[in-house]
Length: 77
Image (tube, rainbow, N blue to C red; front, side):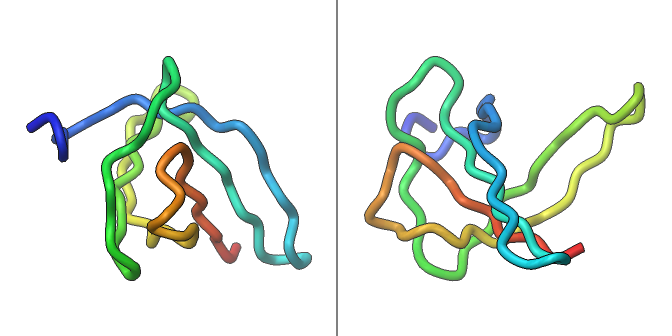
């Protein structure tokens, strides 16, 4: 449970606009520290509340598994 919690709070730190239709969202752990380790190709389920509507969607992690203080998600519109 400590190594891979079922849910954790993350915060959006940066948005990089890679192309007109693709952006990379950079998240870190709320309160700082390392995020759980992952292997290349793994994904996370992102739970968000948009204008009062809760939704969840899986996204592949695009950052290096060697970097533990952030997750990068590159998403095409």
